[in-house]
Image (tube, rainbow, N blue to C red; front, side):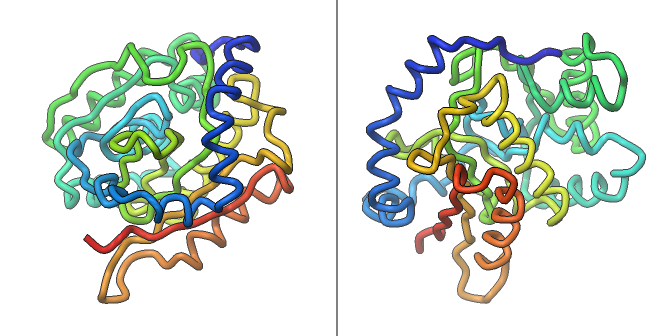
Length: 260
């Protein structure tokens, strides 16, 4: 499987390096912490509109697991058509694949029965999606903004705004991003479940998450004056459904896009 190798020393170091920030967030609550940042609105000023993975190592852009590779099945044809329509409407300007993609590895193993082909499938799919959207394939990201050997995310953003980019603000922790705004409800929950399975698995920070230091799911409600978009109640309900199996090792703390 084309996924990161276990590296406990590196995982321990990463955990300790982020501990002060997450201790502050847990003490204040995510919403209060973020609302205290004077430049929070900059995180919603999306500069990059290319599709990429939910992986915390692929900053910017619009995030769908494996750039949508898991939708490339007969059972998901209707969902894929809808996502493509949403992406066209979003003004997508490119598609990336990336090294060590867990979604591509899952596709290679479960759909194609060829785990060794994950990288090739990831590239082929991204090229095909780019062609369908009429935009450039922007390449295969080799250098990730996380450690190559493991996933260090302690938070997953369940983004109902469709334009959140935490990587623009240094005081906002990096994490998985599921661009919920562009996905149907059931499939978005599947992607969120994938993010948690990675975080709690062999290639994530696994048993370091506890009741006192839980993983965070952060639903994001779009700012609107017209009662449009996905409600916080729905986002939080879906997040809690996905988190339920992890008990008190996962908390759900939502926040809203600030008024621009």
